[in-house]
Length: 165
Figure 1 (cartoon, helix red, strand yellow):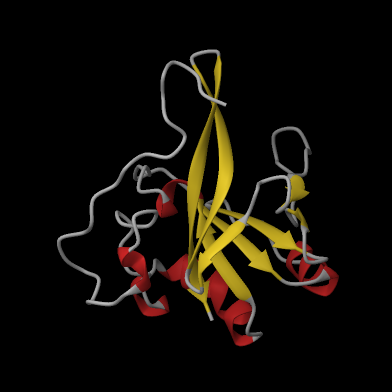
Figure 2 (cartoon, rainbow, N blue to C red):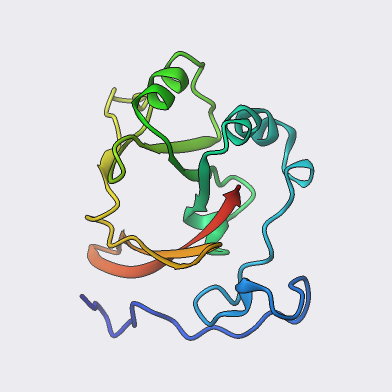
């Protein structure tokens, strides 16, 4: 769906540095996304949140503004964590981080946030199939993301960058 003449898939240019020759991030879809940071280069609170999940060898994908290079200093970190019901239960017992939005895939397709939104108790949920999730390579994926801009419903392709393993 297009609104206001915007294309849902923008043409991107290759990065001038930061991604070695032959790196999977040289594809047109992921061209403006830097090579994923190693765990030690992420902010300490993000490291602390991800470390136990990485130790479980779960597929973790960075999505949202940080993966799509549209973030600001105030942006949160959005992750898709491909796990199971026990990962969802385990995370729900932890205190909800204020700067992390985690969506746990618990049955191979359906996902849910482990914590309700503080403002109204709403729990984010959905499915990878509803998002049109498609692996582009072992380290990148695309999905349909939508935003309401100026009373227009606009659909764009979002980028996902694999963080682990």
